[in-house]
Length: 117
Image 1 (cartoon, rainbow, N blue to C red):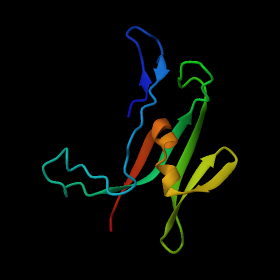
Image 2 (image 1 turned 30 degrees about the vertical axis):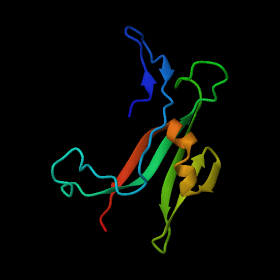
Image 3 (image 1 turned 120 degrees about the horizontal axis):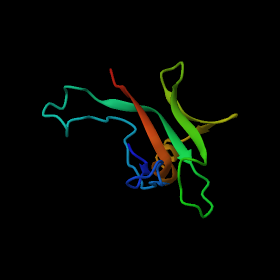
């Protein structure tokens, strides 16, 4: 995904694009891109990285701010939970928080794993 905008001739991106990005937590398929939906299987979100720019009136960009990771962690009983890694702070987050507008607006990378079940 591309979250930056670079004007023609500019040496660096001018600003960050903060549009909402909808993404599935489970069952991502490439069926719309290929004729055979089952050829590549389905994928579940494993982790994401988001960028908070702490914009205070400036044009939002990647030269300021902070990166935060959210990952799905597997428990011993095969259940999973979502965990946010923010420097020294590690917190449990809900599925609703993972799909909140703030995450959809600030996500810069999504990592999926193939569902082998």
